[in-house]
Length: 312
Image 1: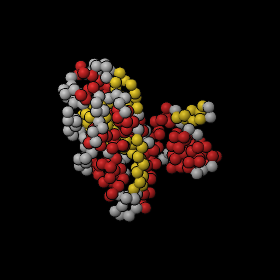
Image 2 (image 1 turned 135 degrees about the vertical axis):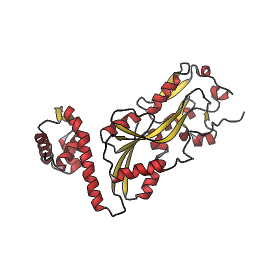
Image 3 (image 1 turned 180 degrees about the horizontal axis):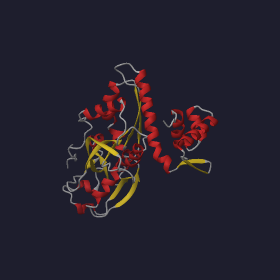
Image 4 (image 1 turned 60 degrees about the horizontal axis):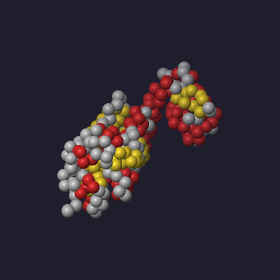
């Protein structure tokens, strides 16, 4: 047996996240000498350094990056063991770290978590919203237990579980020149002013692929979330591809219109993603079972909803 202690693993993971022994000690409520001894003891046990020291900060080296996900996994299993011992026979305790891309975190969080939290009220959920690339990176690093993202998640080391169908739509403010046309053709989009998501977003990648089917336009804004893009479209700054689920209220109020674009493929899939081979404790498995078993929320599922256009 190597003899690495849980405390040493905790210090290693905390230093990797925070970049210094001092910060890790504060987070773990240890003295700095105690944290330093724990990290040094772990490095001595395995016979290699895990960090490079530069400018008073510690940076994971190649060996440290390899061992970090395993350290997080071991700690997760130990925490699951403690929770199982403390819980009653029919209850689940503990915390799940979930990452969601913008569409899921902003508009479908009830579908993702509602059934789970109702069944397991003593479980805690920490949900972070970011673009798809960052969510996938954090899943692979074991910084998240599970992610929920839009679009393809084609990365080595990921397990992908299809969850929901979803769709984008090209949206414009009423009165926009394209909204006044009865039947749109690709050529009508020449020179259009587009508002796009930031790079790293799965929505951005899909929209860029589809825009190659249209004549060149102008990118006037790049914004980091769908709500900001929607407000820019409402202000008349341009047109944008937005999740249908994000514009239901504005369509009903006549504040936005969907431009018919049958020549574009704006369908996509939302998926749950985990690190391949990750240990599925009872809490994580309960979330997966609940989310995958729940039928889509008809009010939120905009993938096949009608295109709404104002009467003229």
